[in-house]
Structures are given as structure tokens and as C-alpha cells.
Image (cartoon, rainbow, N blue to C red; front, side):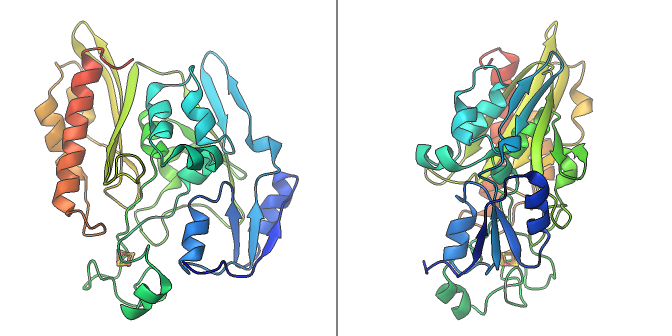
Length: 315
Ligand code: SF4
């Protein structure tokens, strides 16, 4: 780790002011800083300006109606993990992020906008320089796929798959979009946000059934997911009435598993679901853990979640 680079710190009091500063060249937003600051101390980025969101009351609210739960982007993961009246998948995902100290500072918006990760990228400046850097930052070659011209770093946020399973929308300073549209399949530029556009809140419709989240990680007490799966499931008379699955940790963006419509009206088929996950999860060599292990882990997590949710073992 190296010292933080010199930067100008802005602490705007309004969203409009924050958006103005965020649109300046070489400006970065900072909320809890649990993702950004370690990266800056690895030499990954030299922003001229950091725009802190910590003064913005507009980002902190949580409101419920019968049809919608709205959670501000500045709500911390610690707060989320203690809320009783939110879907289980979201609470479990928040609880699974890092350690309690991180969750006290880390925010919902920060977790959604987490940078992608790669074993060749999240390294010290010295290590990366010795390896001639890489395509994502400062170099010309991807060490994971040297023939390609696209970064395949993995998205590793825990909250996005839960919110995708729950059909959430994201509200930014510019628009309201389905959460899946916030992400692009590009490890070097995975967020589809315009200059100065800030994530303000998420909107979650009334749940259609039970939900849950599970992840596999290197260190059980504190780690990013090697694979993470969230599921929303409703059963009627022993058959599936609704199923939606969100994945993280395996691809450059979190994504909704496609093809689950096939399961509607049938009995839970854990083997078929696991096969579907294996086909769509696309991990590559971006962690020290083998890519195929992560693919298998995602399939097993989905299989187990389906079993537990359909039997009512998760609320
Ligand atoms: Fe770099 Fe390739 Fe890893 Fe992207 S996937 S961070 S370009 S080594």
C-alpha cells in the first residue's frame, strides 16, 4: 500500500452540487470509501477531486408503501443488515459483505457501483509495474486473455444480485431504470452512468414470494464472492409460480439468469436450474481460485437455494 495521492476533497450539501463536481474531469465519487480507498492506496487511479456524498441527507431515506420499498443509496450496509422489514435476500446480502466495521461505513450505492476485480489488477503498484500493468489500468495486454482486447474482471458486489432477483429499479440523478441497465459487460467500464450521474436510491416492488442470498468466498469471515446467487421464489400448490435468479462474482456484470420461465408451473427442478447456471456463469481466470470451481459453486448455490426456498426453510 502506498500513501493516498493528493486530491481536492469536496463535501457538497446538495445532490445538484455533487453532480456538478462529479462531472468535472478526473473527479470520483466517494461514499463509505471501503472500496475506493484501498484501490487508491494500491495506486489504482489518481483522481484530482473526490466528491464526498456524506453530507447528502437526500441519499439516506428509507420509505415503504404497500407496493414499493425505496432505499436511499447512502443507507449503510450495517443499517440494511439490521432492518427487519426488507426482503431476506437483501438483508442477507448486506450481512455477507466484509466485516462489521466495513458495513458501518459502506453504503448501498457504493456496493452497487463497486469496481470490478481481478487478481492482476488488485495488486500493488510495484507488482503491477513488474508485470507491465494490464489492459484495465496502464497496460496493453490482458493477462487473463492475452489474445483479447476486452477486460474480463469480475463484478463482485453482493447487493446487486439480490436486487436483481427482487426486480429493483435504480434511481439516479438523471433517470429511473431497471437495475440490470446500470451494468455493462465490460470489466474496464462496467457502469452505464453518464458524467456526473449519481445513484440516488433503489426502488423494490412488493415481493412476490420468499427470497434468499448465498455466496462462496475464500475467507468465510470477510471476502468478496467467488460466486454469489440470489433468488426470489413463489410456490403455488407445490409448483413454481415465480422464480428470478441474480448472479454475481462470475462475470463482469451482475446479471439475471435467463430461461427461468421454463420452470413456471413445474415442480422445483434443482438439477435443471444448476445446469442453466453453469451455462450462463462465465468466470475466467481473474481469481486465484479456478474459474471452473466458481462456475460449479454458482450452480450448487442456486440448487441449494431452490431447495431451501421451495421447502420454506428460508422466509
Ligand atoms: Fe487486467 Fe485482463 Fe484482469 Fe482485466 S481481466 S483486470 S485486463 S488482467
